[in-house]
Length: 248
Image (cartoon, rainbow, N blue to C red; front, side):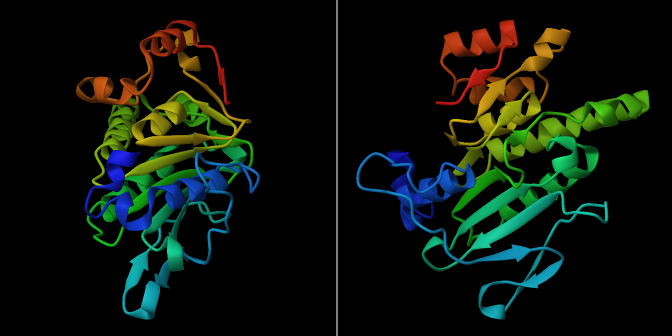
């Protein structure tokens, strides 16, 4: 990510190494993990959780949080890091009971969060992570999808594609911190990010191809942009076999 470090207003403002260290912590790699060079595990520092209406840094403004329609938990947590990590925003997926699968509600919240962040000039880096140990994202919520009326499926898929493409087109560097399973739409969500930091527990795959389903989280015009991040052999292997890839 050396090139991004020289981009005004991008990782150069925060230092690329620190942003990747934060992502490593988010992926659950822990303090023993080491980046190339002298960087080692460091505390990520304090943060502000945007849940409901909460004061932003300095108390001069307010940020809108995006909480689940379910009363039991927040499905998406928006975290604004402070001090030396100021400018890093962490999007935490939190649907433990559904293995962080992408429901209509979660996709809606992701869309709202991304829409707000892309126009926030104070945001320098965005990290997408899981709040649930051992699972990044299991893809689309198939249990919910089975219950959808046929007229709902098309709009849902279109919305999911739009969110993934919006993440791919964000004006700031994005990092996917992968801990555990990243399957189907979950892997496509990770691929939409500029950088992927994976724990040894990470397992990635486009398992929907085993059901003769073409990976559909991205539109045709953005397929090349996202999938060029994978070596051609790996891309074909994932799509044609549907097998799960183990993290390093």
